[in-house]
Amino acid sequence: MAAPKSLKRLLLIHELTFVLLVVLAGAAGWAGIYQWQEASRESQRIHSLIQEVQQTRGDLYRQMKELFDAFFLGDANAMKEYDEFSRAAEKHFWQLRGMAVGRAELDAIDALQKSYSDFLVVTSTLLDKRKKLSREALRSSLNSGLEKGVFTRYETVSVQTEKLLSMKQQELQNQLQRSKQQAFMLLIIPVVLAALLLLFSRIFLQRSIVNPIADVLHATTEISAGRLEYKAPQTGVAELHALAQAINQMAGELIRSQESLIRSEKQAAQGALVPMLAHNIRNPLASIRAIAQVADGSHLDHETREALRDIIDTVDRLERWTGALLAYLLPLQPHQAATILQHVIRGAVAPLQTRIKEKSILVDLPPDSPPITLTVDENLLEQALYNLLLNAIDASPSKGTIHIELETSPQSILLRILDRGSGMPFSPNSGDLSPGPSTKRFGTGLGIPFAFKVLDALGGSIDFSQRDGGGTSVSLTLPRKVRAP
Image (cartoon, rainbow, N blue to C red; front, side, top):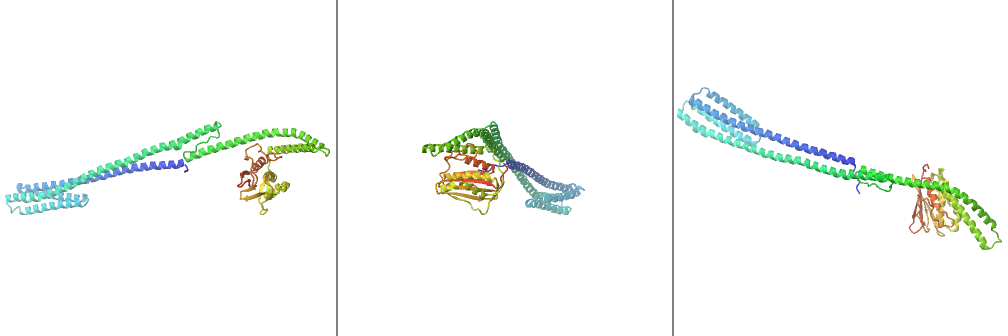
């Protein structure tokens, strides 16, 4: 299962996406404005070119008029105005060249200027010959040579130039239309993305934040009502996932605390009741045992003596059970000191030598070297090992082998007791206050609970498991330095 994404990361992605949308919208707007400005400048340039071309044509018409005025009306200022129009036309051509863009426009202006130059050449020739030509001959030259020839060619070139510029203007209009469509598309994209972002945000907020928060609130309501086993669903963003996990852990801790409190209350109740019962039981038991011992003698028959021994054994069994129950219920006060673990193991095995010899059992002890040191209450640990080893010896078949193994690490020590007996008659539980069932004649069933209690006081743990091929493995984990009780 993929790890949930962090809300901080998702918000960052959301913000970056929003910034991207703003950038796209800004870019679309800027592109539209830029294209409009470029098109506007180009349109203005072409319009100026057309105006200049038309003004050159107007200057040409005015020059023609001044020629007629000079030749036929004898206007003294006509030639002066003719020259002024010539200079104006030259200025227009100079401006046309400055505004022209591209080879086609320059070629059209060159053709237009050449045609105008031809007009000037013809008019100069007529001016030189006007005194030699008659009035009719001059009129014929103006009509045929100038107006129908040079002027007509200039008009043709001028029309072609204007047509070229008109085509460019039309192309510019088409380009503007395409630019509008592109700008519209560029603006549509951010709008669509913004709508998708809004939809995604709604779905994301609902699934990853709103619903998980509702689940967490429902879980807190259930837990506060006392249903500590209820689990908050670990869904949504990483922060809410961690919150639900923390609530579940808190509920688990409350369950364990509740169980511990109940266990403590039960132990307190038992601890207050058992000493009184033990006192009231031990006194009559002692009297019964003393009477049985006094009554026992060689003058009695075998069956009577056997019955008396059974009474004594039963009293001894009740005495051991009462003592073990008192030891189990009383609080332990570990006295920690540095000790060698191998010495503790041998101290636990020493009182069991008689039982070991009776069943011809081999106890495989760990080597004494290197010595394994730890801080622990030696007496409590030895009693716990004694009870566990006694169970292993009683469960093992005759001539069997019990292995005691050690594994060390810088922080802890693992001690294993391995037997090949018939296995555990029950599943030991550290949280169970009731003694487990015992298959031994004089067993109290308190050996394993007492070992659990000792290991808990020493900051360790016990684990019971079945061995492959039969038998039981008891694993004790001990810290190098025991925590304070």
